[in-house]
Image 1 (cartoon, rainbow, N blue to C red):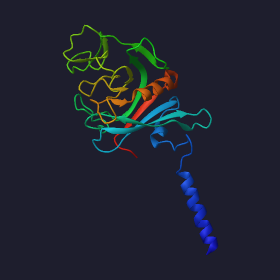
Image 2: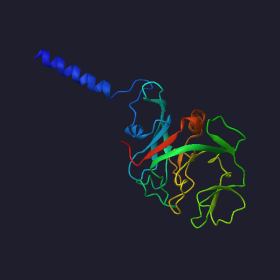
Image 3: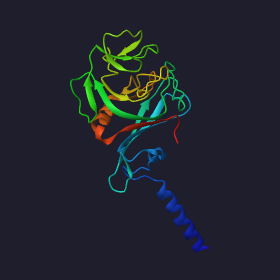
Image 4: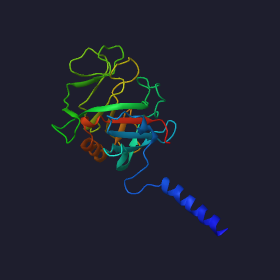
Length: 228
């Protein structure tokens, strides 16, 4: 009986150790295994439930040795679209939902002349527009004013929401009219204030991401409708 108890104890201990994280060594999300070998950095966003405006963001770097993923930062609180995260392939223009899927991160923008980042960064002015007019041939493109589009966002806003921004390459290549536009990671209004479809974080946390991200690492963002 004592021998059985010892065996049970050690089996239980192994199971617990296998599901526990120590320091920055968290068990990588299964989605990371779907990424190609050239992808060295990944941000994973999990929604908190159907139509919930809040989410959790985790940050991962692929190790050179062993091809393993390592957690880089503590989990980050985020907000998403006012109507939650859309199921895969169901995002539409103006629906207030954040698209789910895997998207490249290559470009960043902001109000300042420069920012510490390994992404391609551009300072924006009042002439920088992102077109959300479905009927426009410039739909879901970053252009310079003037434009004949009937609807667009100015990337230099009167508030700080786009003080720092990262372009999520959703529906950018190819562009499909009506499937959604202007999806960014940007500064939030607050921890309970949703977006029109973007992922938003505190200014402190978006600066951490910008500092860490680099084009040479082929970074991506993975957005899931619900936590796993």
